Image (cartoon, rainbow, N blue to C red; front, side, top):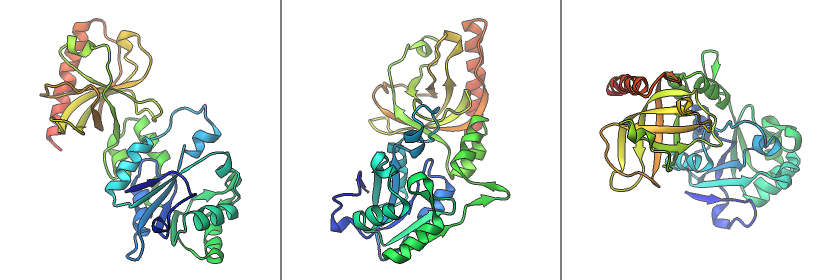
Length: 308
């Protein structure tokens, strides 16, 4: 997959794609439907998305809400067979373009798109004044096709990034997975921590969740992918998401204990899938009580993961 970070200076060979356009946070099943509708035999498959997320641009002090980083999104899109990722800089220039100017300057003159697929709730242009129907009209006048994908739903539940965030905030990992089409994952580099887990008999791989929507704090049964090195592979484990109230620390992070694993993961990248929320974060009366609970958590996580 080729990644392009602007609509200017795109080579002729990289133009003419059939593109799906949106933010694609989570790349959930609704997003996957939009992407599938953009697949055509006569054109490369492309994605148009925006970085930073427009919500981050307009409200930079907002609480973290993203389901995945831009790199994780790119990795997932590549696995879906996307050939061109047009990750456009959402800045003063882009945000000030009217819907008509965006269609002409970005889609036609810049990217030379052949066809565009958007969700039914897609909005674009300055002040979000353009909608999917406006894009359809502009496409007819400017020479590119437009497909409007209906929102994907199951019963009365629409699959959306907002609904997935709500499910994760409530610890409903399987509901989130149903909408995503895969387990919700937190990807990142293993960082040096306080090494308390090792002292307790439960060494952990520590990862930052900065910038990401925090799932419900607590302990989870997890699947862990070690993405490189001699110990590359998938493992079972138990993880804690939260602020470690037992030790008075308040920066949320992810600490993962990998079962039956012996190795140094510092600097390696992991992908941790949240399978089941076991319990909420808690403060214990003693380290002995904490270790006893960790034993229980590990046994519960092993049983859940074995049954998958």
